[in-house]
Image (cartoon, rainbow, N blue to C red; front, side, top):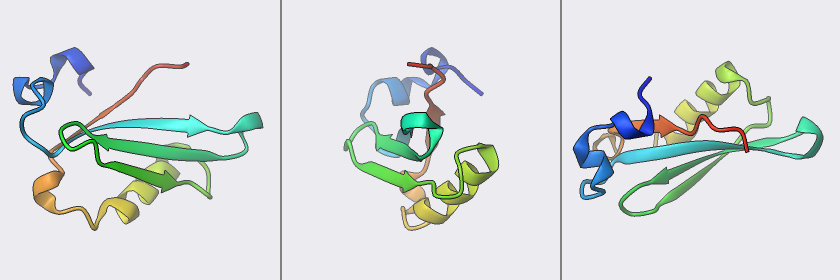
Length: 85
C-alpha cells in the first residue's frame, strides 16, 4: 500500500490516464454502500453497487466484476482513500 503522496510522479501530474482513486460511501445506519472509482485524468466515474456488503471480500469481488470491462491500458493504479469523514 502506498499513500497518495508516495505515488509515481506520472500519477500526481495527471497527464497519463489509467490511474484511479477509490472511495467508499456508506449509507445511513450502515445499511448500504457504494464504491466510487474516479480516473484522475478523464474524471470518468465508476459506481460499484455493493448489495452483499462492503467488507474487503465483497468489495474486491464487486470491483473485479464491474471493472472488467475497462480496457487493461486504463487500469494502471488504484489509490484507495483511507480517511474517515
